[in-house]
Image 1 (cartoon, rainbow, N blue to C red):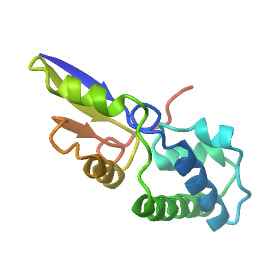
Image 2: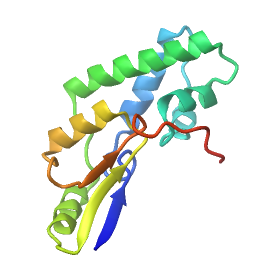
Image 3: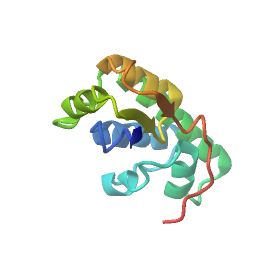
Image 4: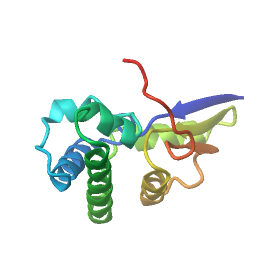
Amino acid sequence: MKVVIFDVDGTLVDSQSLIVRSMNAGMTHAGLPELPRDKILSIVGLSLAIAVAELVPGASPEQQAAVVDGYRGAFHEARLQETAPLYPGAEEALRVLAARDDLLLAIATGKARRGLNAMIEAHGWQKLFFSTQTADDHPRNRIPR
């Protein structure tokens, strides 16, 4: 038996525009200037609080917390209105792999549990993954780059 572990953002789902819009909404919420797209996308994969600390290291802890809150609110609202598109071939690849008897599928992501569960439900993937691990399950320290 083998396990195939997938990330979500940037691997299965093209969520870049949603991440950029939500992060800049968080910045505005905290009274900070918006950031360029490439800077925001450089932190994809980090848990949210660590990502914000890396994006605005000079901001106070209160401002960083406000960015996190603003991001979560904007991301949640956008997610209610739209589902981030899958990359071409992602759905088919998952279905083919899930049908194999010698493979188990899993997800390990920096997304929050709530966001991952909503994405899985939106795509009807509830039975595809034997394990889903999120930033909520495994908070981590800063990852060296």
